[in-house]
Amino acid sequence: MRNFRYPPVLSRQSTGTLIVDVTTDPALTALRPLSDVQVTVRRQNPNGGQSTIAQLTTNANGQTPVLTLDAPPDALTQTPEATQTPYSPYIVEVSAENYLPTIVNGTQIFSNIRSIQPIRLISSEPTPFASRSSRVSKLSRQQVDEISIGPPTLYGDYAPKIPESSIKDTTSPGFVVLPAVVVPEFIIVHAGTPNNNTAPNYTVPFKDYIKNVASSEIYPTWPTETIRANIVAIISFTLNRVYTEWYRNKGKNFTITNSTAFDHAFFFGRDIFDTISLEVDQIFDTYVKRSGVEQPLLTQYCDGAKSTCPNWMTQWGSKALGDEGRTYEEILRFYYGQDISFPGAPVVSGAPESFPGTPLKLGSSGPPVRTIQEQLNRISNNYPLIPKVRTTGEFDAATEESVKTFQRIFHLTPDGIVGKNTWYKISEIYVAVTKIAELLS
Image (cartoon, rainbow, N blue to C red; front, side, top):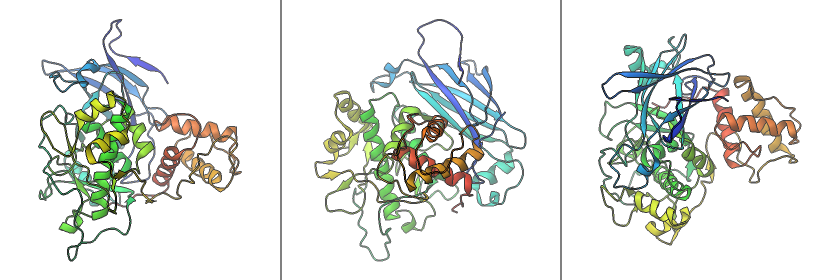
């Protein structure tokens, strides 16, 4: 894949990269990459005008070439004392025949980080599910899908978390909890405070939600173990909301909000960072559990600089511990106590089959290999650059190459091994291309 550089000068200027993924909206129709789509990347000038940086076209996978863009030095993300903006914001405009144009304001580029900007185009023609989507209802009036990405919570001005009990009392009469801790297929995100009844709801795949929140709440340049610790905290908090049906028990029709006073920051349609995306795919079912308690711990935290929170994790404190070489388990135990463990959710809802427990690779055989071969072949109908393979149940060189191609397209490490992250990503995409996800109102 070609790599474009803007501006084309020789300097020590810090840079990051951007790739734009353009598909249909899987909440409204089967997932399909959109090729030959025109993508324009612009930058806001200090005088208020805009400069066009690049005009790109998507390939058969719905992806643009990788674009190299200027970014501030990553030193600005290493200390809370830094006051300069630690990223460069860009504008991404997408237009395609028979689809509403999309404009993303604020795509964030960090130094030495790849930003993945998803664009989910909506047909300009009515769809069977359009009337059930508040997002589509709004777009029918304005005829353009305009997305705004706010600054990271570490840099912007956001309401601090209102303290809650980390273990919910679920014994009250009429309080309903799920029978087991599960990773749901979708999260319903309310774009406002809990009692703002005019705010829209967004139906988001679980992993996409976690990636969105982590990309909004921490810096992608931080140590890997710090990133992991924060991701696990976000997952555990979210799974507590899911398990306790916290807002459903209050008569609400959503899982969680995007208000930092109550939950986590979430910006619909924002770009995702590669360092965060890879980690979420690895540990998306890992949560924090207190000894003797069934429900996931509501792992509240604060930044530790603009606000303080005794007995909670602080994000800047987790960064310092990561710099010291602490593991994510050590970081989380430092803040939440030594009596916590890190189980995996016993059920992953919405996946056709559960991960067999052992990575599949060259030489593997059996029904799980056949499952992967069948799913890759179906996915290749929508993503034709993925080579079709014989469904023999034998993991041969052709299967390995098909897996590597899939991994490259979906931003996974292209090692040709079907570990847990690749297995569930294949399952997720298989579901998205073979069925229309039902909207939850």
